[in-house]
Length: 321
Image 1: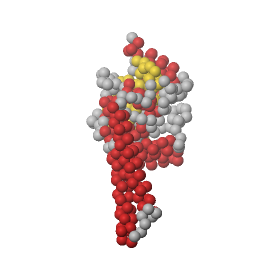
Image 2: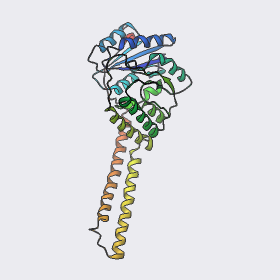
Image 3: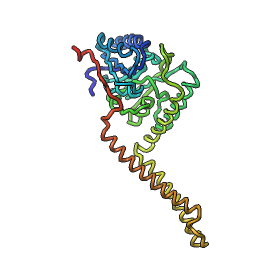
Image 4: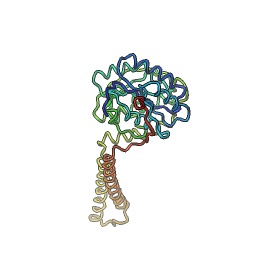
């Protein structure tokens, strides 16, 4: 999707943020307006049950810069971001939270670094005031593991980001992968940098995250390792495991045969023989699974236009005029 003359898109998921949305809109509008560049603010209503949706509608009617995207029901932060990215039109796309833990006043710093030619600039949160045990420590561990598995140099993967528009709209996100965007862009071959940003507490309301999220992040990291290490080809990983099992089974079988030929030992009842048979079956199973996943991967690549959300409506003021 082309930018249609828009320099900056701000994409923000909103789920029950009625206490924050007016302050967020006011501050973001003030910052973007001061830059003298064309912009849009894409607010994604992720199935809110409070007045967030109505507030977004009101903003769309009064300000042509605001784009309201309404998901049919609550689909989670990642899918809301994904929907917003696909509806964005800017040459630069900023992803930020609606609770003002990402300060709008830091936007110019990210855009200035983007002007140096990077595909992604990440805000690196400093002086975080969140709980050490519940938020900061799990975040540090997750970021270390993500850097180790993907090779991405970014130190703070989640949150405030600015992405080149074409790259942002080319992303194909699955649930939870909003935390992996820098790593995904890195795997695509994108260039990236970081700038220090503030990390104030929520302006209002209650966080939607808890310690249980760390378990989901762990599985995301394992999947990312799988993609990064084996070029998104399941058969590369499972094929290696299959060959290892096949080789081990063959060694055991040679040992058993040597005992049979040299010492007359009975083969059928010896544990090494039974283990070798199980290893051969395991080898066949891993190889079969690898080929099956390869076919599924090919099918998925052929239908990449399928999205994990459904948009009920998109409101743009110019469409009503």
